[in-house]
Amino acid sequence: MSKLSRLNKDRTVDGILVQLPLPKHIAEKTIIQAIAPGKDVDGFHPVNAGALFTGQPCLKPCTPLGVMVMLEHHNTALRGAEAVVVGASNIVGKPLAMMLLQAGATVTLCNSKTQNLEEKTRRADILVAAVGRPGLISAEMVKPGAVVIDVGINRLESGQLVGDVDFDRVARVAKAITPVPGGVGPMTIAMLLQNTLDAAESLAPSST
Ligand code: NAP
Image (tube, rainbow, N blue to C red; front, side, top):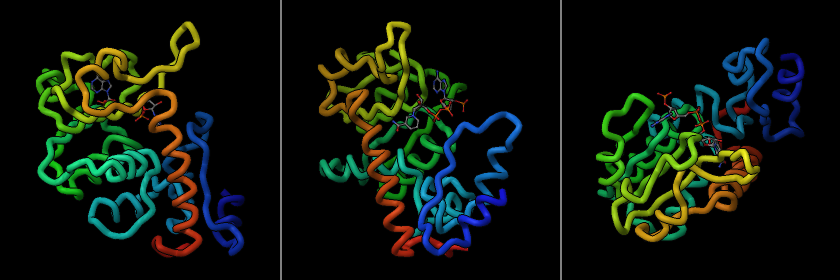
């Protein structure tokens, strides 16, 4: 905590990232809340989360931000589109649902209790998988012509790294699909650098 306090006050430091998960004896919530919102380049502080929710300028979580930048870069129509986000964590699914909503999409946010997942995913013009279960999204669950974003990262027993989407089969029905590795992951890192630059230029809420 004292280290964070020092970094918060240090005018030569623009961004602070606390690598999660933390050891069990350290409360994640307490640590995140101890970061100055203006230096919170992960965008996890409740001040930034609240600002995102209410559509105000803020530092946004890097993974969902990277997804939005990818969609916008490829001129994916978001206004009026059906977007389905599978996975509702605070760091990916929830903020991404909010960003898609603010971009004009009609958003369905699914979690582990969702009934008839396939019925929801098949409606999606934009389908995002952010769960952490290899093979969760099969080709039958995807509307032909959908844009599919795979946030999941799973290490198989063979050592292979895969996402949540059955890439080979889904690629045959999707209009566009992100690979794992090499898709959302590098975008997340790029957005972390973008957030740090934004924090340095003070586009974010107050640094203290
Ligand atoms: P998390 O905190 O474990 O959340 C997983 C979410 O998936 C929860 O909302 C959970 O529902 C939901 N879920 C679980 N089983 C489901 C099912 N069968 N159907 C629908 N929803 C289900 O995970 P996370 O931190 O968001 O990460 C998700 C995945 O993305 C992981 O593989 C992680 O490694 C990856 N990831 C990648 C990046 C990147 O840069 N590419 C960044 C962050 C995370 P409940 O809310 O009901 O529990």
